[in-house]
Image 1 (cartoon, rainbow over the protein chains, first blue to last red):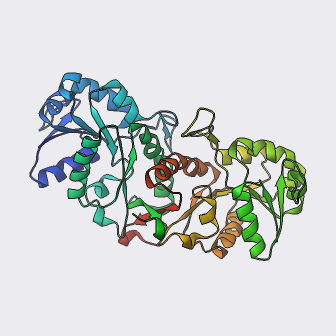
Image 2 (cartoon, each protein chain N blue to C red; image 1 turned 90 degrees about the vertical axis):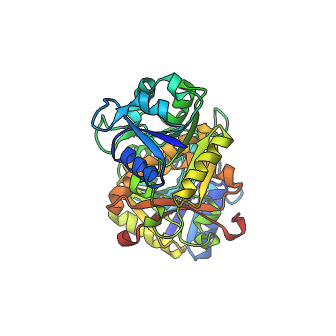
Image 3 (cartoon, rainbow over the protein chains, first blue to last red; image 1 turned 90 degrees about the horizontal axis):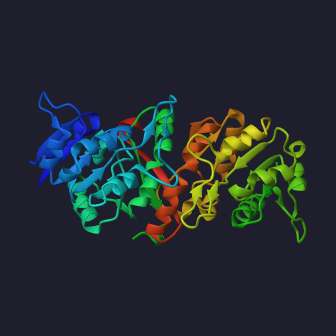
Length: 206
Length: 206
């Protein structure tokens, strides 16, 4: 399996390093190629599975540069959030409530198999869940069950045990709207080394 | 301490029953008095601390009926959510992103000490956290530290151990925007007996 990672920020670099440590071939795509980075288009053409690790505000432009032909009907793991910092801190969401970035990408590229996950925690924890003690969880949204199963398998290989499949891509509204409390918690806790866990009644545990 | 509970639905009845079991005097206020229920105004005049357990869409009207004079500078524990079911299921939020119901109430009644909490879980768990095993948490938002301390004391008497003080009332945007994922989780888990826990890195634990 070959991977493309769109985005050269901390998130993209962390994901790419993890995939390489597992022996996968990875191309990291950037707006401007050079210095070991390729273009969004070259990365998207190369990968069987594509990570969208661009900033939410830049995601649609990055995917347009990647090119519909290169995206095709591949799996896109979307971990971006539509954060709007234009009015200062804390950011608001540029898309929310009755829509989401995940849905917007899926609508724009109907053949793409968009799987929204990993957007609710910081990148160090994404690839190293054991850095936080006890149980803590991921969420997943997407229209294609086989694509979700494929992504689940990869995440399990990173150590994730509980991944809540919330349903179709419209459920990305729920996880993207976790960002406002995530940002406030980072402020009140004073660090970003935390994650959500869904505690359940004993009789309700699966 | 005397309590007012505005709202005669399941949430209001559950809160009132819990307070009475602790020996507190409680008046439950309703839009239409009668059958053991008093008016919003009579309840608000009676209580030292007021619970807003009305539906989010009805909260501002209920508080108007309660009357600014009766609300005064009391503590209002706001556990309502601005859910909009007018476009079907799942509901959207009628206020979100750059505002919240908690802030709207605080702006409308500046002397009131609004403490937003308990709005992120079902009412059976609100008053009986041990129904869910392991650690799970509450969140709290409000401008008045003493009011938050008073509410914290009451919630501790209900068994709550971890209550994250997120900051001023604007942080209610974070907890109200938890509702979209709460609703999807209720769907995917098939029950409402769950709650959020914030898992932290061992080195970051307070």
